[in-house]
Length: 204
Figure 1 (cartoon, rainbow, N blue to C red):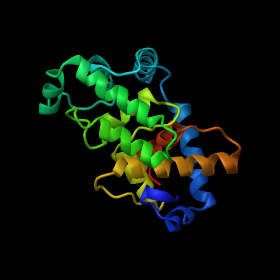
Figure 2 (figure 1 turned 30 degrees about the vertical axis):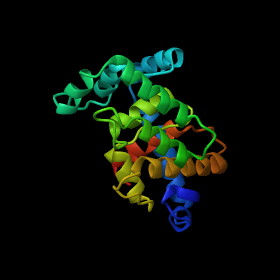
Figure 3 (figure 1 turned 90 degrees about the vertical axis):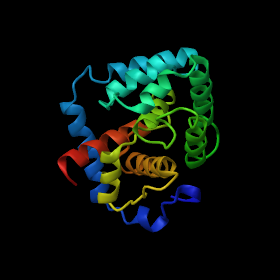
């Protein structure tokens, strides 16, 4: 991993074939055990965004439910009090930036910056990443503490400081490329985050 990822080459090449195999095994195990309908909400939100080009408050609320997050928070109240057009302006710009021809680190960084006006989405955490993954499923991935922990466990520390989502996406893209090259697969970023999620739940 190079460029502004914040994840050094040493970290990437510290990965072994065993770690890559663990990712593939974890993904297979997740797919074998996953409920066929759990991601219906994510898919429906993604389909709406494909038509509208932006996410509204209803879409974000659905993703909060999908992520099983606490909605009894100040940021949810503040978000619900924003005009719908301001929410859509911010998310629409974020999706445009996420699809840009820039490297994934810069694309993710720009997308998170576009979401800054929205309460609860300013730091690139679980909600912001879910919105980006729904809006740009061909490139962005879902981030949460489990995926973060799994990266740490396989030797890719990304820290918790500002820019964590951009560093996360750099790591996800590199892992996707490694898996596809070594196993002849066609993973997207979402496949990596599912594998990382499962690895955290089951241990490295």
